[in-house]
Length: 79
Image (cartoon, rainbow, N blue to C red; front, side):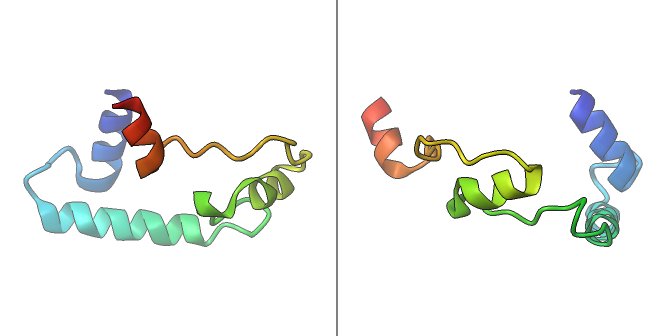
């Protein structure tokens, strides 16, 4: 709920029906975040595993596999 309030206020002044304003707000925010220096922003895909994330955070890479809880195999096992 707090996240919705912050996001809606930042992106579209809480007007969810105005999709063009919401999209413009998203693009503006994306571009603003993209201007952060490389030392402050990690463009990361979970498929990359531990190494890029740990390097960015300055911590050792764990010796256990990266979590893959949202893949089809895990989902099938849970069902």
